Every structure is written in C-alpha cells, then in structure tokens.
Length: 326
View (cartoon, rainbow, N blue to C red):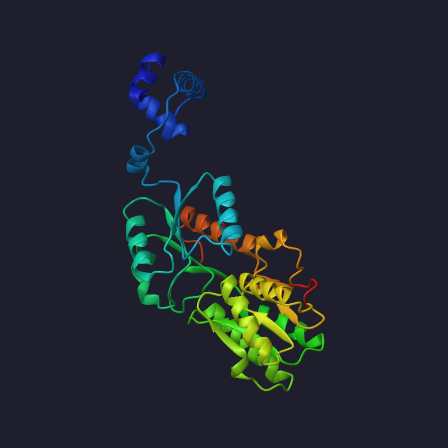
C-alpha cells in the first residue's frame, strides 16, 4: 500500500509537507502542492480517512437515524444523500426498525467519533430521550417537532395536509367519509386525525368513530381488509392515512367491481413515488419529501460549519395532489 512516506520520497520533500498538502493545502506553495498531488495520483495513494479524522476531528460523515427504509423514506433519503454529496459529505444510514432500544443503540454507536452530526427521525417526542445526543453532536430533527429540545427541525404540516384533502373530498359531494388511521401516538398521524375531525365538524358532520379504523401499520393488506369493513358500514368515501394503505383499498374495490370514484371515493396521503407504477390515479397529499431532505441536510451542514448558526424550526406546507379517485 502506498504511504505518505512513498509520496515524500518521490517528490524529495518531508512527510510533514505531504501531510500539509493533504490536510492544510493553503500552507504550501502552489508548485509544491501540484507536485505532490500529481505523485499521489500516479502512485495511487489513498488517504487514510480514519487517521485524518483523528487530526482534524472531522469525519465528513453524517448519521441518518430513521425508523425504516420503506417507500415513505425513499425520496427523503435520496434528497439527503445528494445534498450531502454536493458538499463533500457521506451518509451513514441507521434504520432502527421502529424499535426504540435499537434507535438508542445507533445513537450511541454514532457518537463514538464516527460522524460530524446526526439527522434524526425520532421514535419519541420526549426531549429527555435526546438531550444527551444533542449536547454531544450537531443534531437536526426530521419529520417531528420535539418541544423543549434545543435543536433545529424540519417537518411537514400533517394537519394542514389532512384538512386540504378532507375539504376536497367533501367538495365532491361525499358525506360519509370513512378513515383508516394509524394506531400510534406519533404526532404526525394524530395531526392527520385531528384534521379529519375538524373538517367534519366545520361542515356540520358528526364524527362517527365506528367508521374510523385503527391500523397497526397502514399496510397494503390492512387497506384491503378495512375497505371491506368500511364499505359494509355504508361509507361513500375512504381517506387512508397513507398511500400504501389507500392502494389496498383500491385493490379491494377492483376485485369486487366497485367503481372508483363512481361508487366510492378513495384518498391517500404522502404521494409516494411508487404511485407512478400504478394506473389508479390516486388523489393524495404530497408531504414534500425531497424538499424535507434537502432542508435537513442544509441545516445540519450550516450548523457544523458555524456552531453559532441560529437554530430553526421549518414547517413545510404539503400540497394537495388531485387525480382520479376523488
């Protein structure tokens, strides 16, 4: 393996000069810098990033701690990766599979000098769970707002998105709107339920808990199952709290010759990229995953480069995507 000593001997300079060119090039003349860089290229020298990190205290790596790497996070992860790469940073992906104990293990692992900062999709809204992480490194929270935690955050306004799609459903003449919500305490899904309830109330429609199903994971098969239950209770439309679940509803309708939107209206939430693979024309809400990824990445890099950079809480306005199903 080629070392800095090999480069130094080839160029007739000291090892310290080679090190300065690789780590502090502004301290070396242009002629010497060019000579050493050409030698590095010709000999195939690969810098030892671990050794460099010991000297500079920087790894140029960002930890991304997410509950999952499913369809919902695809655009977000893509956007984060591209934004970090454009600034010379890599990504260390840590999916904790919706398990709080695994999330804690990943955070502990990342804080052992492996990263310069962490983008966190938290499992909890309790600030005490993340105070120590926030003190130990640069932390930006994604998709949530954790009250009392002194960290920047970027989230999407799930309440506003729910209001937009419910108002659209009612504007199309539907009155008995069934819902498939998430059986979780996470704020984003609670906000979607709150929007659903408020739009009903504001339009003089009584909230009927019997046509609101609590799904374990808003999976495709759950949408299929709950569609049968809700339709048997006389709903004229179904608002599924994510797109994958809504696709399950559409599959049930297709299998049972139920016309959409003729017999029933169907709406989802998230505008996942997989919708492009189907010809259902699902009406949904775009939570702005690409923008969210870019924003969290930009925030964390700004804070890493400038510790005095002010903390920010950015809330994105989701977009109603009107297609065929409502």
